Image (cartoon, rainbow over all chains, first blue to last red; front, side, top):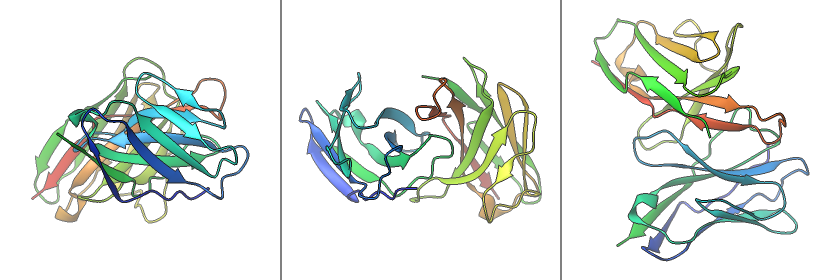
Length: 109
Length: 119
């Protein structure tokens, strides 16, 4: 599997856009980029995934660079409830997710 | 998405007893389910992959005789921690694989987790 690199932690002011980066320089052509988050003491929550085009849903936007070596998850208007650990995962198929350490996002009031 | 439940949400047991945790897929039939555990301040660790009607596939280092997994129906998988000890205290989380006809976009959805404390 392609490895991912994420910052250990980030802060974002409430109401601002939270931009979470992920490096996946060894990604293969058939591998998708998935994002999950885990709020404290809860199970992970699926956010979004993409292959090479930018994607948007009701939760977030996913921007993937043209060379696919990095991506950014954007939460457009962060709220306190977005405080969580965010995981960027690269896989050819979503069977058997292996979690890294993720980014701990703190939303500041 | 998919709705996944776990029961119980938390359990406290004595050392040496066995504990069963249920994972249910509430709104679709799941051929494949997964079990993870998470220790405090650590990431999730995959324990095993459970396929309906067949034996589970365990990750390296996970004792299959200690962590018994049964996936007898398309909506229910169970994890039994046998002869539990304090070091088994952890947060156990299941997930289901929502197959959408394209394996490249199949998505996993997770349950809320079960916190096990072994005294």
